[in-house]
Length: 121
Length: 108
Image (cartoon, rainbow over all chains, first blue to last red; front, side):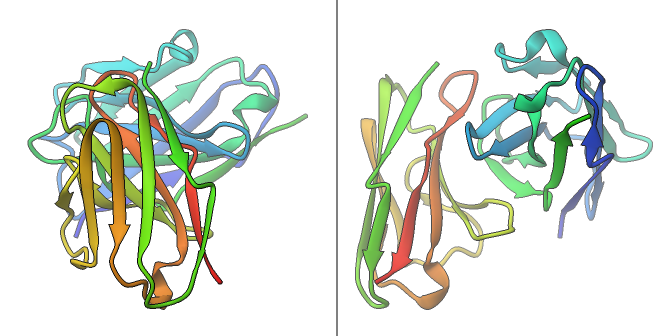
């Protein structure tokens, strides 16, 4: 059974960089696409971006200038960096796996439990 | 980007009743690239339906999806106590993938 686990600071100061890591167990990150998704009361569920098993990334245009998603196959992990954060970036952040036989635009069949990130001084 | 509008916002039903949830896409989705998720408090969304009508692994057959173009429907044939939750639709026809705002199915 594939399991995903997000990790990282729960509190980030305004203007700083949010950094999260998703560790995948029970399966390899190779052969799949992986996404970051966030959920806030004001904006609902929002796709942030994805990384492919080849290491190429695609980002939501609304966040593109501030996002970097990278992968580490040796650790079976992928990571999110979101720069210049503001209070509007406060949300629960999820990592998720794309469905099989599915490319960058896809549904999500496995999700992490989510991690609350609050932006505040 | 494609905007998904779900209705109703809240559905109040009793166990055993039928639930019908709507998801409207604007502009239309050219394929059947629509998914449905269930989310309970404090949990991540769980995939129910993909490809508009295919049930995900382990999902009971009381959940069914239908529709195409601009109108999609999730039907729960007979509500079980564990089904009460918030349901979201998601389109993956074009990037960026987008989600609806959710329909809450609550116990009447």
